[in-house]
Length: 58
Picture (cartoon, one colour):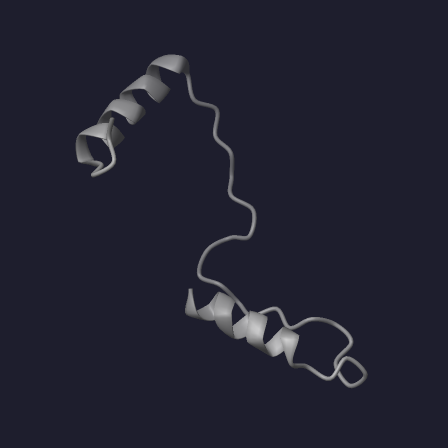
């Protein structure tokens, strides 16, 4: 979260004449997440696993 806040602050306060392109700080995760195909059975098992560990499970 700190990196996102820093980038937002830097871009909001940059001199657009001196730095026309926005600052893009490196992040430890990819910007676009890989979408994996999951079968309905795998999805149900993953959802059940998540609900067992979630504090917000229904």
